[in-house]
Image (cartoon, rainbow, N blue to C red; front, top):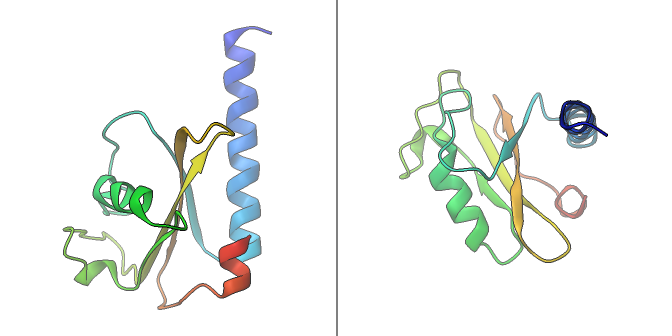
Length: 116
């Protein structure tokens, strides 16, 4: 398989993953973030400090109830009221990237959603 075909397959898998997460969690904005150095803001939110914080969480999930009030300096370009970041790891524990969830309404993930 050529590199272009591998890249296309990875992009299709990423799109499938974001659609699945959006449907399962009823989340309007879902993005995949590669773990490849500094990233561009997502919806105006600097996700790099949030990703660092998520990696340090015992369960690997960081929830920010209101990014506009977060001390890490998020400045959402939309009225984002909720953000969650979950690092994606391989079987060896190496971080590959993160699943980033955003919503315009306040929310808290249920225990069942956290486990998904």
